[in-house]
Length: 207
Image (cartoon, rainbow, N blue to C red; front, top):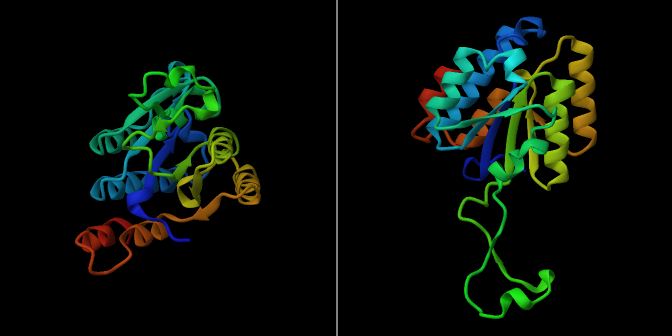
């Protein structure tokens, strides 16, 4: 299965100012996070960010923060390592709304009450990247899988304080059903064709 830009959302996890200096290959990871956000912006893919305990770790580094804001995204401040525990799932797929009409609908058992999905509930492919890979990124991705999202982890935009922890996270994520991809894989799967109007712009971002 290939990524579909029209069915995708991008989540960037905890690229924070007091965390990133300790992260393995931090400059490459930050650069790829910015590329992902810019590509998402070009294709109208929703972008979300998170920040773990920002009073202690600070906000996201300026370039990532600016890229999320430029794409019209929001940043979720959190204390749990998994952003899903702080409501990220509701941002990605808002709770179903009960259908209006039918005067006695509320008297029915819950499993028989009709619901209507919100207009923006259809994007089930979650492209996710962040730090640390073996903590906040992994816990968030695993819980998104439990919430029945399709999860695509962008490996070259993720890292930890050590290679060992980063790679252990990738092994565990793959074993639980996440797809492991790279920034360039995301770019060319979102585009699908060299005739796409954004093709040349994307080449400038990934090359």
